[in-house]
Amino acid sequence: MGTVNLIFDMDGCLINSLEVQKAAFYGSYARVVGDGNCPDFSEYLKHTGDSLPNIFKKMGLPVEMAGPYREISCAAIDKITVNEEAIDLVRKMRARGSKIAICTGKDRYRTVDILKYYGIDDCFDVLVASDDVEAPKPSGAPVLKAIAEMGVGKENSIVIGDGYNDILSARDAGVKVILTLWYGDEGVPREADYTAHTVKELESILKEI
Image (tube, rainbow, N blue to C red; front, side, top):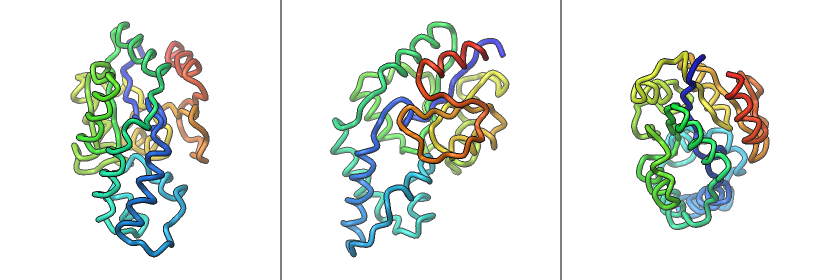
C-alpha cells in the first residue's frame, strides 16, 4: 500500500467522552421531553457517528434535544479524556509522511473546541465533521471528503473507528477499515478488515499494511 493515510473517528479512538455523552443524552431528554421514559443510552450508542439530529430522528426522539445536548457536552469538556497513546501514534505516523484526518459525527464547532482545549489541533491535516457534509456516517461521503481534502487516493487510505457506522461509512466509500476496541466492545459486528484491541495492536497492523 505504500504510505498509508489514516482517517480517524474521534470518540472511542482518540478521546473518551462516553460519560459526557451519557450525561448529555439523559440531560437533554429530561429538558425537552421530561416524562421519565428515556430510552437506554445503549440504544443511542448504536447510532454514534451519525449527526445528532439524525440520531434523534432514528430513535423517534425530538430533534430539539440537539441544542441542550450540545450545551451540556460543551459545559463538560474538561471531563473528556484524551488517549495519549493514540495521539502519539498519530504524531509518529505524520512524521513518517502519512496524512491524518478526523472524520467525526460531532459538529465542527464542538470538535474544534475539544481539539484546541486539549492542545491537539495541530496533529491533524483534515477535519470532516457531521455538519460539513449533506450525508454524515453511515454514508461514505465524509470519508470521501476527507480523502479529497488530504489529496490522496482511496487505495492508500484506511478508516479507523470504534462503531458500526464507521465500518459502513468506509465500506460505502470503498476504503479499508480497522475496528478499534480499546474502550470496550459494544457488540459491533466484526465486519471490518482488521480489529485492534489496543493502540499497540493498531500500530502493528499499520506496519503490516
